[in-house]
Amino acid sequence: MKKKQVKKKKQITFEDVIRTLESPYPDFEIKPGKTALILIDMQKFVLGEHLVKGAVKAGLDEKTVREVVKDYDTRVKKVVKNVQRLLKVCRKKGFDIIHVKMQGPTDNPRHTAKVNRKIGLIIPPQFEDSDFIDEVKPIPGELVITKTNGGALSGTNLDFVLRNMDIESLIIVGFLTDQCVLATSVHAADLGYDVLLLEDGCTTRYKELHDAVLLAQKDVCAKVKTTDEVIKIIERI
Image (cartoon, rainbow, N blue to C red; front, side, top):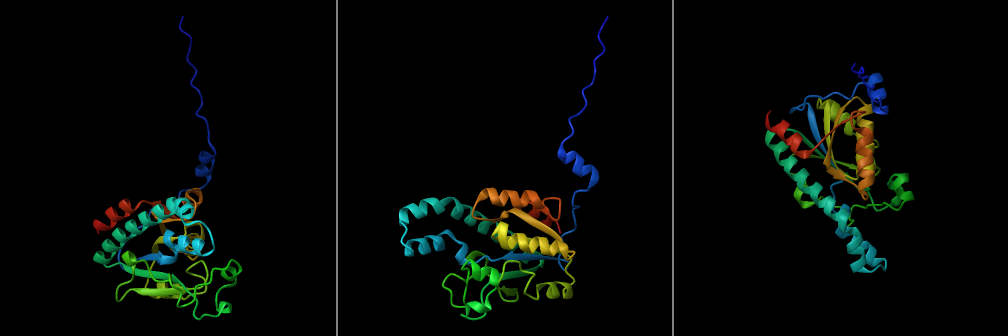
């Protein structure tokens, strides 16, 4: 006589519990006139070369500095290439493009946000590496928003501008994932914008922090996709 097989119950995970109680953040339509591409702090001071120059000037060994900065610099350059590709497609399809730049209005540190003053992140108008990275710099007609703090929506008129443009969703790229990108995306979601983050369209100093931020936001207050995925969506429009 054959023994009756007992089916094992599927192991329930914490993710199963969350998805039973909450729905994943839904997909939303990306289209010109309703979606804006927001480039956060894509300036030369985020490049590895800027870090090397500063560290050497402070007395550190150049060869050693270049070696320890290498991984970060490689990831930054990959992001720049991906954003450059996305930017080209968005321009072709007529999307609104907004460049967000970190820079103080004067040389006076008191005119910069307190949070940045406390860590010495002061970027006056004539700061040598405050220019936009060449591959992704604005072209005539594209809006530039200047901020002195982290998030692009606090301390600026960006939300006012977006609402007057009837923008409903944002594609956010740039630097740094765990700082200005994170602050902007969470604030945007709180304000009611649909947010799309490019997992290979931003990075930060440590890859582990980058991955953690995207994991925390994915399907909670934003959608997370690759550059290739988003370009394919846009090209079909």
